[in-house]
Amino acid sequence: MKMKSYTLRESITLNGIGLHTGVKTNITLNPAPLNSGIFFNRTDKSVIIPAKWNSVVSTKFSTNIASNGTEVKTVEHLLSALAGLHINNCEVLIDNIEVPILDGSSKVYVENILKKGLKEQDSEQNILEITKPVKFLCNYGYAELFPNSPIDEGLNINLESSFDGKYEDQDIKIRNLNGNYIESISKARTFGFFQEIEYLKSQNLIKGGSLDNAIVIKDKKPLNKDGLRYENELMRHKVLDVVGDLYLSGYPIIGTYKGFKTGHFITNNLLKELFKSEENYKIHKIN
Ligand SMILES: [Zn+2]
Image (tube, rainbow, N blue to C red; front, side, top):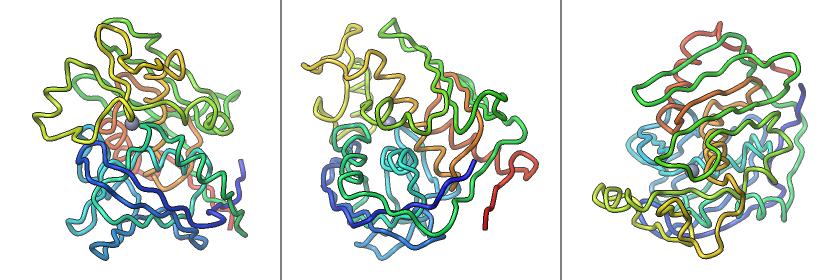
């Protein structure tokens, strides 16, 4: 598998509120030169935070990264959009602590980026291929990464979940995500269960949450008046999160991700397992 490096053709500025903090934030995605990777620039603090698995400082209900104590919260949906569009060089200027939640999916990021267009760069991307299975298991779930079967290519994601009661099919298999992302995944919104809302608020979370940026399920039905965007939107959103969280590896991944009740905590710990030994993967460097 070979893939050119991509950045943005032009800068894009968006603003909105953060899901958990409720703060209003301006965010600008800038084109970046080859070998920059994806990184955040907290303009109000003059701190650069690389979008890497080892910058993660907490994974409770969102993926939060930091450098020298300066944090950017809820990076996963934006990273998912960048991964899905194969953008590997981008500077993200942000003037507050949390990435705007927008509509709760990565759709707004994807649409705005595609409107301005991608810029192909003069070098191939480095790609990480899984060569040995790795697994992370905790008391409620697990995730593993293993080499693709001979008929699969790119990144494949197989998830199972177990929400309380039946809202939809609680398993999903996405084969060869590359090329599938925009239509099948990017529009899936984040979600919560009505009975958990009071708890999340008591934890000082979801201060910016509303039916404009999240699906809320009550009595096995969405409270959102327009219903769901996909029949299995919840599971598709879990795929969207996995794609974003895996992009903190710093590479597009060739391999299969399989998990049960996955979330930000499990995926980040899986990346820690992966990078424990260089026998687990091979980096295809073209240049
Ligand atoms: Zn999410």
